[in-house]
Amino acid sequence: MSTTSDDEENIVSDGNESNEEQSVKDGSENQDQGNSETDNDEYNKEQNNKSLTWKDLGLNETLCKACEELKWKTPSRIQQESIPLALQGKDIIGLAETGSGKTGAFALPILEALLDNPQRFFALILTPTRELAFQISEQFEALGSGIGVKCCVIVGGMDMVSQSLQLGKKPHIIIATPGRLVDHLENLKGFNLKAIKYLVMDEADRILNMDFEVELDKILKVLPKERRTFLFSATMTKKVKKLQRASLKDPVKIEVSNKYQTVEQLLQYYIFIPVKYKDVYLVHILNELAGNSFMIFCSTCNNTVRTALMLRALGMAAIPLHGQMSQNKRLAALNKFKSKNRSILISTDVASRGLDIPHVDVVLNFDIPTHSKDYIHRVGRTARAGRAGKAITFVTQYDVELYQRIEHLLGKQLPLYKCEEDEVMALQERVSEAQRTAKLELKDIEESKGKRFKKVGAVDADDSEQFVGARKRLKVGGNVKKNWKRAKKK
Image 1 (spheres, one colour):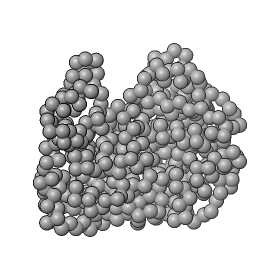
Image 2: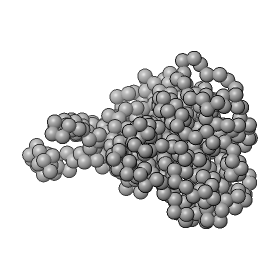
Image 3: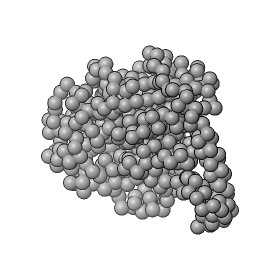
């Protein structure tokens, strides 16, 4: 067991720092890094050598039926390995990528135990993001619909009073981000976690990367020692190892994926272009691959909104998703994309891991990721459950070194995505006009936020859906300035 460096923040010890994990490894060299949890049956047709049923894993008939109703016909690898051990009362470290079925891997044994011991505040699930918390809650409620399970989501960006009322009803399952949970522990009279029987830390590497060490420390201190703990992570970093030693007892390690691997069905390309023509090439590729669903990754919140405004000005169904949006608007954006009301989701890395967004056909790295590992998580949104997918990375003259790091991580050189330059540059005039429209609309959004800030003392985090494409529609009316002012007053 490697030791952590001195400059890492402390994670509270439960007195188990000497415990070493056992190891249960899958042994596969070609693990599918990104499977949708709603497609376990297809995943196993392509990837699984076993044909175990849910009943074979030791689950109650009610839960087996719930899995079948969700069209989870057979367990995924992480589920096959972890559920029997969890039912034996083992602490578990699961190393698995997003979409491998890990939500079911910890939810099903918890619900099985809840059937035997139906008590309130039974399990606590910690997640790094608000969206993932709501997604996990949906999974628990779907799987536990036959037994009347009650869940409560405690995340930032939502009203604390209403959350306090939900906690007052004493749900079976609490799904929380660490920061907001600590707020309630410190401020809500009578609320504690003394009854918790199960603790799950999902995407632990991300929780730690988001500087939640202090909050985790506080939470672990108030949890009972006699509990079962499941820790799931995409990677086993030094911080995750330290957290494991502090919070788990004699854990079994289950590893069903190789670090930094992409699936065979994923076709990966790069395109080398001058930075000033990025938007033109983006529009060309979207036109060329029209009919697919796209996730476009940008490096900043502002660029997601700008790009969405530009594409909408060109008549494309694009919607932004970023961390500065209000919680309701983030969920609304996700739902529009998942329901196929929008075919283009433009996102920062907030959406690159942990979210269940099935059927993404093409990932476009419009801004190259600063960290090479983020590339793996981004492209993992496509080519899931045995399906084919495509990823194209935009490389400008300023991105060469970052791109070379990605190829080094992958251990291979990616092919060039070929475009006919004449066809691309034919779009330049239209794209330039759309860029100007987007710039003006961004300015209007900022002015609108500023006025509301003066009135109510708070700024709504995102209004791009309200303003997107509005200028283009109003131009038909003739008097743009007058119509625009009237629209804003409404």
